[in-house]
Image (tube, rainbow, N blue to C red):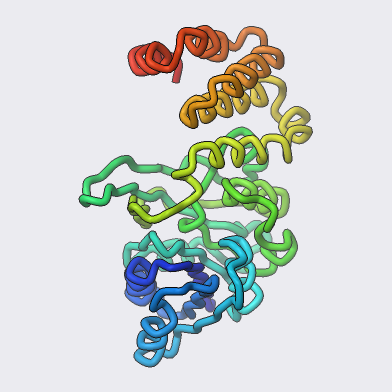
Length: 302
């Protein structure tokens, strides 16, 4: 079964080369690599052309203007010739057996999963392990996707027909796009996972949305607002309360205590027994330094 690996990139030529080499090193051989250049101004085109000349499994597509990562991924999906599509962000890499172990879980059975994901490790710029994400949910995980973020983009392999059914990535979603995609995929099919860390997320100094803490907070809130009615109907008020609590925490990190307090209060409104929201709201009234001290010393807040 052919797997199309979609790698979006923008002005990350050296990181992109590392990602491509990790894709080429897969023990699963039936693959193509589609690099979608979102109008880079660095040496990406020349360097990728050199790689393409050495391995014809590599395809290079380029946008005429910068359209964002979601649009780049969708361009890759449209061009994909495989029955399955895997995503690899240009700042990440895979371990050699990733695809082989994931593809072993796909089959032609009626109840076969449509999505297979895996664990991943986050590594600092100095090469130290920061943390490790271990998958927990398999089967029909729709409620779990509404409750919490499920899988990083670079860990997902999905059947192309299902991707087309959900119309790929939503270009209007500017952050937490993998959360949005997993919710929509979970409406369509079951999930399975390989329990080991087979992908590496590298921290670096180049720009990304996750480093803009205010955009990150608004991005999280955007997903909650988009699926608010489904979260209420499927998971109840406590789940929505938890999401507003997390929104408040993200606004704290962005230095917007006014917005943080508003969402802590909204969390309490939806679930008056939400101790964590009450505690965070109270601490936020005492200022940034006190809030940070209390949060770091009261682990029971989560």
